[in-house]
Image (tube, rainbow, N blue to C red; front, side, top):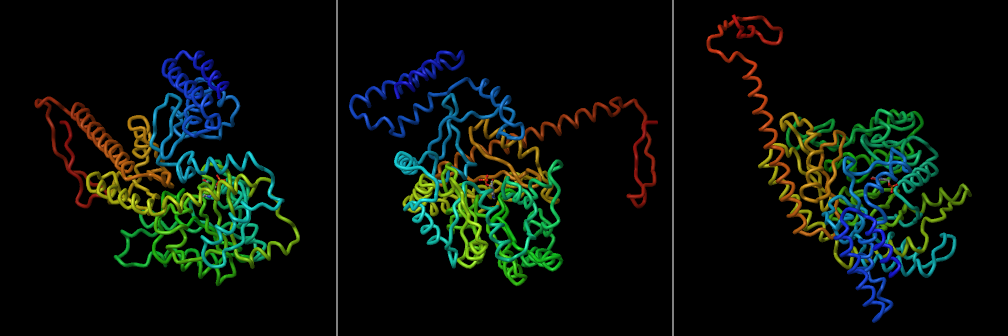
Length: 539
Ligand SMILES: Cc1ncc(COP(=O)(O)O)c(C=O)c1O
């Protein structure tokens, strides 16, 4: 710790900017270290001290980090806030801190599920890392306990686990399981879906392959419309109240099943589509789809990579409110609270089909003792701190308050969500539901620069402001978000009004200002105006 503090002193001294602030932090870290090492040497690793040390340990000025990144990191690896990227050096709970110590309220991090650097998760990882970290081909209690907990938390016969390192790997393996079990290859996916970055799942991710430079969709992939009742193919405003839009959207999947040349191996979908813009499917959609897919001999895969582990508040898994039980569930992101770990959970029958090939499944890091110890700690913390309940209560409050904003600001077209999974869709015309993409971008930017609140935007038109904060998000955090968001909406409204006034002014300046100028009214025919148009012409 002392060496680390000295390094901080040196690096701070070499900075022209922020020297004083960094030095103060370094000094306090050093003094804390000295006190700790003198009295209780073992407490050097205490999270608060370690955190402050890390805070002080910026290795280089931000400009140098950017320059190195530009030189050595692939251009396609995009950052949040590209115009002025954030350099985050520390996280705690629902907050992130930049290199100057500025605090940001994190509303986008569904990775730091139980809060950044949760002490119990950090301690579980630290202890296991200091004891044993190896591949998963040795017996280990953390691995089997993790599998047992997952199986206990999942319904039905979902009881056999495979551990992986990421959501992409989980979905890739899920496809292999479904294909092996059904003896088929075709897949139905939803429009705008994202299931990961490895080749096999890029093939089933319209979010990627529909981009102008994306690889074309393979023939064995069929895309069903995203069940978005606000701006999707079937909109609630186009049908009488009570119309079963779930049936209409499920009918689309049914047609794809009927037209499939060799039979469908799997239907894959996020239980609530996050990349599509926080989509809540209509009632009965998934139930009907699952019935149809199973009747056609296919397997059902629920991608819970973003939405699992209690985020939706009402249930632990986001497929549960739809009253369905998938054949295969994929999980990752929140499972490791920032550590790379994921899993695929399936039924004994599907696992048996997969084993029957005789080709063994081996994954060096998937399910290593450290990853499993961390995942076990995450699941314990969710239960101990009742974070699912917190998501339900805080989420309800947040949604209610956001809905009341819709009454004040025309820009807010739709507010939807469940628990701490919230989407606010911005529109420039409520009647026609025209996406307000530029406004969403402006909100995301202003929330960061003015309010130090991190939100993101998504959806096919990038006009949905998304919230998926760590599950320790409080009602006070919701209020902080609401104050900032309201200010952004008011600011946008005011600048739009200002623009309109300026436009009117410049128009009136172009028009004949002098009353002396003579004008004449004339009537002309126009194909779109029965009876003709009246024009004012200068004489
Ligand atoms: C729904 C969904 N599935 C899968 C993935 C891929 O997960 P990973 O980035 O861990 O590979 C993501 C990542 O954003 C995702 O959102």
